[in-house]
Image (cartoon, rainbow, N blue to C red; front, side, top):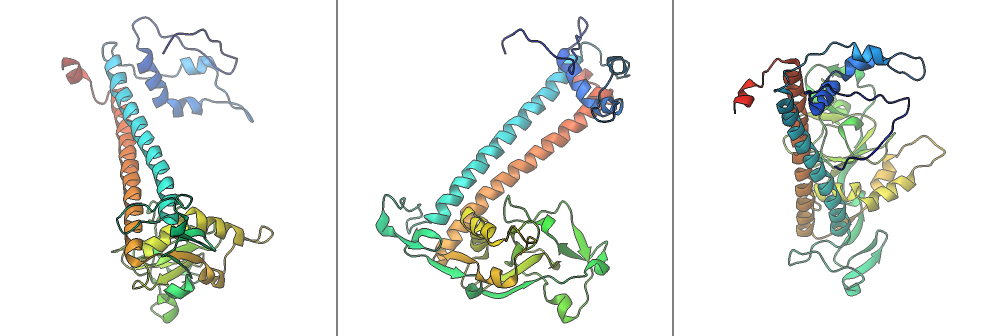
Length: 338
């Protein structure tokens, strides 16, 4: 990066390292002690820290010959994190393109995307969902499902430290149709008919019907015993007629989401009722085409998830190394020897 003249205002302070000290290392050290720095802040509305308080803050200081090595190790991790996050953003952009293409053009008998409607209008027809391939149908959820219901109220009295998974809106995400497990709750429900009415099965489609409307998730294989609360609709598709993951992807896609967003009355409390859910429409290609589309969208979601997991691991590794190297808990002498 070229050296340029610059100036700062009164809200920024410049620290100049003494001769022989590594500026990159000192920057990492400041990042590490940031919580302590913030604890020194004063002020009621706009907080600030006095320069003298900052300079008086005691910090562990590595020997000068170790400082650039520590900085290089942490810079390498920063680079890896940035590169991984760039990959994630690219994959997300690829997914948006795939969603548009696969859910409007589909996959032909040769396993390729159909030509654009503007290039081959004879391959398409108009529908309530816009232009779709001639082989596709438009159907309501009710026509391809065995059950459409919602969870029961008053589950709080059944909360437990372990037991069946209790799926809430927080376990769903707009990023994909898989579950999130960062915040899980468990229940020990009654064994009566109402308690078992919303026990989840593999392939069930879940749709949020209050608050943040229209978030879609599909129950995976092997989930085990699980239930939903009253804020989620359970749509149990006829798996002989449709691929639930295809339907889930379609409902989570831009065409269906745009339709769902228009259903909510802005002047009323956000919510969708079960008749509305039953009347939601989805495209219905041949089953083999549904399977292919679902597989391709699942593949890109898996790639994004793997990259996201890798990024989290790198961040965790960096946090651990910062704590070890910048406190002197782990010495860099072996690295210097190498």
